[in-house]
Image (cartoon, rainbow, N blue to C red):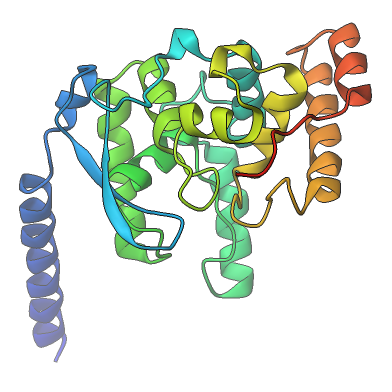
Length: 249
């Protein structure tokens, strides 16, 4: 009986290894992401929920190089989404431990601990389903992205493909949509507004959820002040300044 069980386990493991190797072989060339003019395109959903192609890289007319994005926006997104981004190798181990404990307690994938690199892997190549197989794929892709790309390139890719609302993808689109500005012109107040939308951009619509967003903004601004990402004068100006959204399109 024990022998039969061992054989079954070996067959399952062997099948899993073969499946994983075939999946890896069929991946697009991740190394091509080093180039600004990569040929990669991904599936996104428009404002009506219909799938369409999204070009990754400078061939996309909405693409914004990292040095053309407000430093406030970069700092706010890192502080909000992954404050250890420049220290880790793709995985925030402390965050993963906390998330694992909560998943075990609730007996389901209840909490995420996704770093910016993990989110990039998911947005480029995977779905948002919470399954063990997807998490395994995500872990492999995260390792590959961290080994092949610089942190700045990972940030540039992430900020240009992440969703900021129904049909609104990338910092170039969202900056124009909500503020009528290019991303380099964003001030601290505007930057933190966009950053706190990221966990659930379809819910945190500033045209209808501004009071909820402002609470999250003030918390983020205080964190940035405590971590010395911003100066006290910048903090005081941001918490007291009104947000001026462009007229709803």
